[in-house]
Amino acid sequence: MKIGVFDSGIGGLTVVKSLLEHQLFEEIVYFGDTARVPYGIKDKNTIVRYAIEAVGFFKNFELDLIIVACNTVSAYALNEMKETSSCPIIGVVEAGVLATNNALKDKDSNILILGTKATINSKAYENALGSLGFKNLQAKATGLFVPLVEEEIYSGEILEATFKYYFNQTTKPDAIILGCTHFPLISNSLKKYFHKNTILIHSGDAIVEYLENNFDFDTKYQQAKLKFFASENPDALKNIASKWLNKSLYV
Image (cartoon, rainbow, N blue to C red):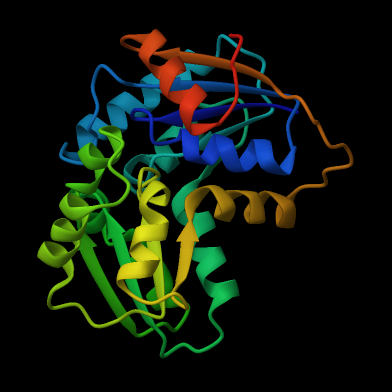
């Protein structure tokens, strides 16, 4: 299978990493809208317009599937993208909700949802989890984590201070939904801050779980072909991909 992965910037590379680790696809085409990132502070109409333009970009390739790695786009624009796409589209919010439901058998579990301002304001996770019977939901917009990750600050005093700023009044969660694809890169620090037994719901792993539950994968691809595109400075995207994916990329 040949798939496209769309993100507002570089965060979706954490989803690509999960896809590569599970060897599900023969070719992955990644598009990051780096010229207009971040989406998390934009209004719905703008997010929808940008998302539809991304579908248009992917029409240059013969794809079997598109994965929307951006939680904000998944929350606001997935239906509009599906209406204009010639191939199926899957978003990380739906996958994250499924993964949370599978991981937590107790509907009274305390769940902390982290994301950008736009994702949190959409209440996409809260509404979906509430419909499944989960009652104890906390949601926090933690947008400061995005620039910290992009500065490669994954631990240390600055991140600890940011945790205290956001979580000083937060009930200790049983599970944390990492509702932004940047956040898995600080997952070890989050587990240390809260509790090592706290379950983390990672968008990349959630997408893999969703795919394996809904599609038949008869072949494993040990060496997927990778293509990276960005609306601005594609070389910077490729350099970050090399670091985050821990491999040399010839694209």
